[in-house]
Image (tube, rainbow, N blue to C red; front, side, top):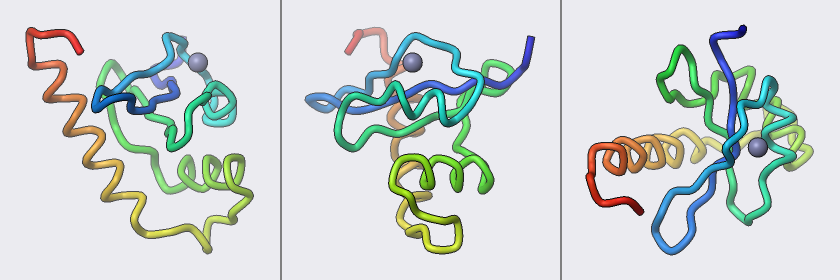
Length: 96
Ligand SMILES: [Zn+2]
């Protein structure tokens, strides 16, 4: 079993939602995104993390047809916000 998998994530009414799958590739997880503004989050050994540059490039290419060197720099900040949101949600007893 691989220690890293990916899942599709999106926000709805201020809540972060995600699919229940353990996708083996970024491309597979991207195909699972059904909401505008969706993203792919990696889980490595049970810990959420942002995509690596290579994974991000794959996501951008699959999702938007953008090559790695043309991607927008705002993505990292947006990803950090999402990860912080997840950690807050996970630490909150009240389910979203
Ligand atoms: Zn999925």
